[in-house]
Image (cartoon, rainbow, N blue to C red):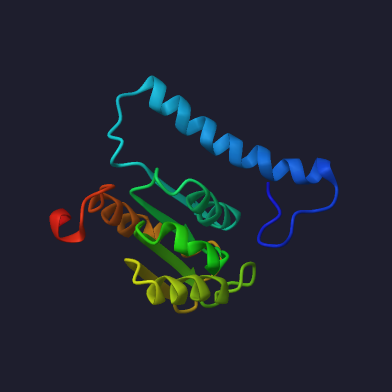
Length: 157
């Protein structure tokens, strides 16, 4: 329930929604860490649509947490990728997405590759906003399974 990629809205109440949505994500992570025995080297972040926009935003804000990230039909601010250049990413978008233009993911992937980031990009021909998610979950989970925070690509193979 954020505002996407633009500037924060002038209304402080509306602006607070972005802060609360981010706090929700981080609160869930805090509770999981407290209540379960988890492998700190295998914490991942993924989202679809506004969740993908939030994934890129939150990953850049808290870059030391994530072993890898995944985005479906999202967009981001390419300048923020410098902060997460060490975080592998799995990106999926359909080229027929009428809700979030595929150019948003293309721009993020282009910048990621320029920075030498490990990036898997799947652009689905004819894929719509929602049709690209479920068929690509197995690939996302395989990608996550191959990545641990702090391990080099050769160590993870």
